[in-house]
Image 1 (cartoon, rainbow, N blue to C red):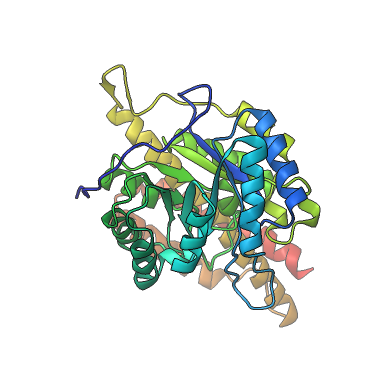
Image 2 (cartoon, rainbow, N blue to C red):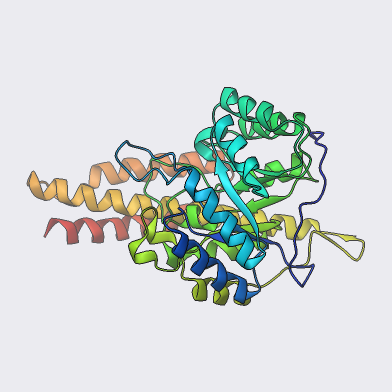
Amino acid sequence: MKIDLNITPIENELENPKWPILIAGPCSAESEEQMVDTALKLKNSKRISYFRAGIWKPRTRPGMFEGVGEVGLQWIQTVKKETGLLTACEIATPEHAELALKYGIDMLWVGARTSVNPFAVQDIADSIKGSDVAVLVKNPVNPDLQLWIGALERINGAGITRLAAIHRGFSSYEKIPFRNDPMWKIAIALKTACPDLPIICDPSHIAGVREFVPLVAQKALNLDMNGLMVEVHNNPAIAKSDAQQQLLPEDYAQMIYSLQLREPSISMGIEITELEEYRQEIDLIDEMIIQKLARRMELSRRIGQYKRDHSLMVLQIDRWEKILQNRIAMGSAMSINPKFLKKFLEMLHEESINLQTESSE
């Protein structure tokens, strides 16, 4: 079902109009010197549309660094004065929004911990009604497409037309390679429901570690997302929040220059082929399979440790035969070739036994 949103373009002052919107800056504003130094280095990279910084940091538990507050907005003003960059910060309350507008912040974003609460989103929408500020809405912490759309509709209903979504992944109880599960299919579903709505990916929060940020960023561009929001700090080692996922300015510049831009879904009047749609879906499924396999192997290691501690045999042939019979019957009901499935399960079982044996030694 298509969602009717009133959308107008968000400014993107990069030299090459084909480049996506690029938002970069530290997770948290920590000092004026840190802000200005980071911003100047990003400015020199010529690959930044907006400078971002967290002013208020809604943390999971009390006692953690929760941001510097209003003084950080003064530092953002200094950044804008010295670099000419457009600026962005997160808001979580109407008071935050009013202060950000007072200090001339060009772009606001509603965070994942706020977008999950319709009451909070509506209060923010009411507080910015009548302004022409650009607003981004992060996906809720939990994978709920309708809740995400509802937050966007509330902001749009306040007359905000320079509107975009931020895909930052979703919380997961399972062990996965990333901090947040990308669940790309939900972002794709949002793009399908709201084709005019820009979607910006936050690879920093999906990745959780800087080594994976380029991988996630390229994946986002491959899926026709309209921009990237990347956390960049002039000295990540001493960052007061999310130190492990922030890039140095020079590493950010190298990543951006190395990214490959794909042609959009509609190019030269030719719509994306049905074959390409199938391939994209297969890519997403393959990623999910790999994540599930990683979780299964971790459980095999834990089982091996349990068997060691309780003096149990690693190989329990009766259970394996029941599993094989059950899984093949299940697969056959889903039109999966029994011979292929048997071979796959045997390989999986062999690796599981190897891991259990290693863990039990």
